[in-house]
Image (cartoon, rainbow, N blue to C red; front, side):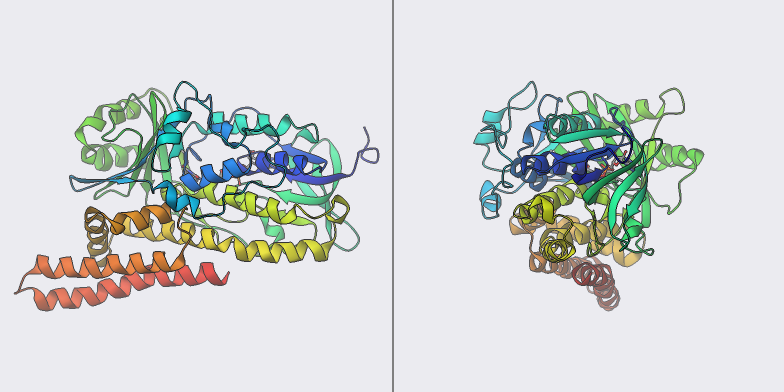
Length: 492
Ligand SMILES: Cc1cc2nc3c(=O)[nH]c(=O)nc-3n(C[C@H](O)[C@H](O)[C@H](O)COP(=O)(O)OP(=O)(O)OC[C@H]3O[C@@H](n4cnc5c(N)ncnc54)[C@H](O)[C@@H]3O)c2cc1C
């Protein structure tokens, strides 16, 4: 078929990662003719997107796609386990009442087969257990398997056309409005609206602005542990110490993902990484975890670990005619809190709800779409500001490398040990179920003041003047960590 003979699609989606297929399926169900272009349709083997927060699962239900976590040996996740200097704390995910206070309504036309918003039972997931649990749950799974399920659901829609190819450029009309894509060796495909979901290394986000580039704060080095003896199965593990934070969670009954933060803004050298993992991380891990970690490190061959940059990018208004970014191409945060898919999926829900009443022939109407995008940009902030700010702020505290940050780090952990609202609110923020800027602000400074109090106690009467001096530094540091980030996110 020549370029001229090709149909005009209502929507073209670039990228079939986590977000692309969710948009494709739901837009198709809204009666749109959708083309989804992906350069690699085979199962990816990545270290990203393997722990889904409860709010991400809520969004999958609203999209009618929750069954994508079924039949992939996924692991139910009940909360977090945090270890610091040999002390530990277990934090449960919030009660279901917290979730039911939010908007749980499905995307229009998402649920056509009755139970598509209900989790199913399989060899590892029990729908009954899920139903009877008083608290919400998250899920751990292998990224590639989850993605293949999402893609299968999208491609099962008669209105979705699959395109196997590398998108190399955007096509613009005489008014400089984006109206199509160029695909390597295949030519041009035209659409009324182009949605870009090309992910972390986005080629096309610069369409929103030449200076729209992420910053790299650190790297995550990921390995897969076999039959790891986890201190708290069915929990995300955050292990703190002199090393940068280590994150761990089960991705199937026999395998756990370990992500070790590495303080570097450039791709770390292999020899340096292996030395760091051997000398700084391994000896400080809980004893029962060390054999599986060591076995992964001593694996034969080059493929011991994968490294990924931890990038940060504040969202901008999608005001480019004919072209919209969603997912990591729009917005990124530190993966420490596992919030990327949650933000992207909730954005997909919001976008699909907003666009539901737009007729196909109006999808190329700049005024209508811009109005929707302004609402989208403002409404998505309630969740996005929390998840993004929390991820960077927590990473800064957990990777503490200065005196004041270390005092704050101890304060965070001691704050969690108090229990009650000192854990319920932070875990509500992290799981994406308390989208309240005030709760984030209050808890962050409650931690800072608590850290100051503990510092005074630790210094004793003789050290009181020094503690006072240090506490001024602690409060200034806390303000510098939180406030610029929060303002940047709110004002973006
Ligand atoms: C180390 C790390 C760990 C993470 N862990 C978690 C976690 O545990 N939980 C969580 O919620 N989030 C996590 N994230 C974030 C999460 O992976 C992303 O938020 C999520 O994958 C974003 O989905 P997306 O669809 O925007 O992009 P992606 O999932 O990256 O998909 C982009 C797709 O576009 C395709 N593509 C790109 N360019 C082109 C092109 N030119 N032509 C055709 N196709 C193209 C790619 O092949 C890919 O399939 C992590 C991130 C990192 C870096």
